[in-house]
Amino acid sequence: MEPLPDLSTLSLADIARLAAEKRLPPVEKWNPDHCGDSEMRIARDGTWFHQGSPIGRETMVRLFSSILRREPDGSHVLVTPVEKLDIAVEDAPFVAVELKSEGEGRDRTLAFRIKNGDIVTAGPAHALILRETPDGPHPYLHVRGGMEALVARSVYYELMNLALEEDADRIGLWSEGAFFPLDGAA
Image (tube, rainbow, N blue to C red):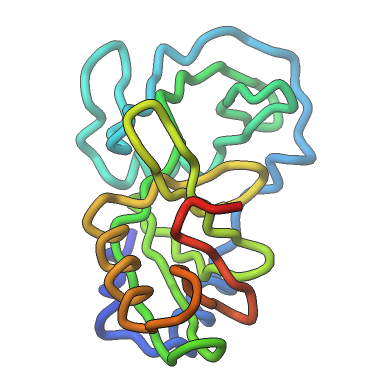
């Protein structure tokens, strides 16, 4: 598997091309019988575990993340054409760990690298939301199939700095023509 891209060295055109080239298995079309528990867990920080031990091989994590699906009841499964296994997810199944911003105001585009190597550009199809939790607000980015990435704290700080630099009436950012408030107001 090729190394993860460094967003700081890529143009938005490069990012869009990489995102378009990423072909995921059609997990939404697979409906095998439930086979049990995978004995796997995704921790809040995005670390994958099997039987209590962290999975150290990035290539394995990338492979498993490509067959991850969210079920209608909100649970998560690893699915192939012949089996479906439960997987525990502590918060969000993904973590956004890097940000690339180009443009300003309504012309801004925000691209995120997810810990598993996926690249997601915030916009109408990939909303960036701020959710109030018992330990304060947490930003999330829609990735695919009802699944989200928790935006890492350092990336959230970058977003807030960009939003404050905009000096607009409302704290938030535009990306691909959609406005995403970061002030917690609805």
